[in-house]
Length: 381
View (cartoon, helix red, strand yellow):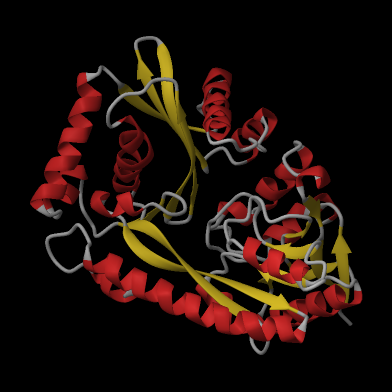
């Protein structure tokens, strides 16, 4: 008979058991990635993150599990519910703590309810709901759910959608062929941006975790922390976590490093999984025209073309990505709010939000950068 447990540390679950529940194509749900966040000081109760991983066991066999966290705020989630929290508390309730099933600091769609089968997935979700009610929590949230898991969220789960911009490989042999399929103005703009970076004397190299030096990792972490500080945000990921990724996920960690003279002047940290490249963090020491676009987008596209990867997901938001070959796609999250009256009001709010988001996605798709109608744009319209 299956037993439901809640784990306060991911290391309570063997890595082989956890990773046996997913295909291994999404690096963000890998045991190494998630456990590394806990081991190396990236998740702290003082920052609103308390690990609370639900799992379904049959004896010593793991049947289903999810990355879960008790949250005292909504920071680092990228699905914004600040207005919900304010309204809930104005009505006299306590919105926090809430239970979040997601990958911290990572707006990357992927599996969330890891399970051996659909039955175990639904059983796990029902157990999470029951436990949240028993603990007096206001709500359960599952962010950036991949499309294949959406059917598990029936009944009273609220549906939200958002938009990201992803690049899809249409079989181009190289960057020049990709450019040739763009509208003339977009093609000219990209060529000019790349030429400015070359004229400035900047050159690039790609390092994976097993080829990156300690100096490379230190430079990348420095860029990351400075970028976050410039925007007034706390850089939660530690240098030790970057080194952990290089050691435990050596071929999935991809660093794009820009050099000028003897110095590393900019960098982007990406992760690779299955047929996808995921852009995550970037930073620089110099202000050069076109450096951001080259480091974060064009080098990533070039890498995907060389490696035969199908999709490049550079991160959340950013309409400026459309002009550089990225097209709008939908992302999904699901939310279970237990107060009936509040949930009813939110259901209407979510419906109107979805209508607005879908209209925006259709409009954005119509402004695609390609000379012909791209199949991916039609698919998401």
